[in-house]
Amino acid sequence: MTALDAAPESSIATAPPPPAPGTVRLWSDLLCPFAHVLLHTWREARATDPALAAIQIEHRSFPLELFNGPHVRRGTDTEAVGLGQAAPGAGFRVWAAGDDQYPNTVLLAAEAVLAASAQSRPAGEALDAALRRAFWSQSRSIAHRAVILDVAAEVSADAAARSADNGLDVSELARALDEGRFRAALHRDFAIASGPAIPGSPTVQLPDGTIAFNPGVDVRWEGPWAEGFPIVERFDAVEQVALLARAAPPS
Image 1 (cartoon, one colour):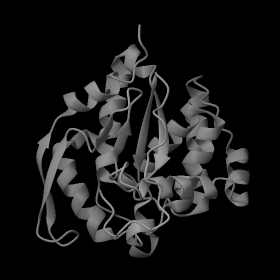
Image 2 (cartoon, helix red, strand yellow; image 1 turned 60 degrees about the horizontal axis):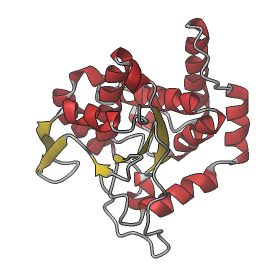
Image 3 (cartoon, helix red, strand yellow; image 1 turned 30 degrees about the vertical axis):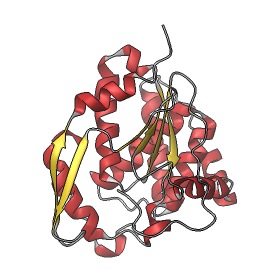
Image 4 (tube, one colour; image 1 turned 90 degrees about the vertical axis):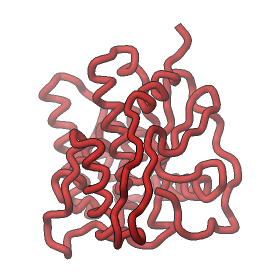
């Protein structure tokens, strides 16, 4: 997904330095279906390849609503149908809860991912994945503080049950949200995303300086956005996994 509006005059024109070896930086919006597909592909690959599992994902925010206004349900519903055909394992579902529960904003959820990432990179990854699943598969209103913290508690409990502590402290996360500690960080991400270096959601940054927008997917719209439907003309999971592998540190 790209921003529909012009970038603000205060935008930062250059991307931040590349991430360290062993880390891939992902700029995305929580309600971007293309990012959801990319992360699903990466999760499946990392589950079976220890070398890929060792690569950490640094989540950064590409907050589409700060460009385009509130998220439009028609857009996400049609994208879920289109992308779901290309990646059925990603668990896409059209919104099934009441219209009044639809999350037209996910800025607080984006802050939560940044706050969790500050606790630990695995905590940020786990919360990001759970929030996307809560929206795309479970029709939960991740705009709401209580839902965000419920999802975080589920992430923490699941890690404890598997004896795989990811470092997510839910009480600390709640304090960070209530104090707005990561609001400025989110807006710094927005300023960078407003420049030409980060073209849209999802954009991948690799340690070698590579910047790739929506890798492995070519899509066109049949009819106007949010009125017609997307047609995926190419989906290459192998390309997506190969990109992730390039973030591995030298052996």
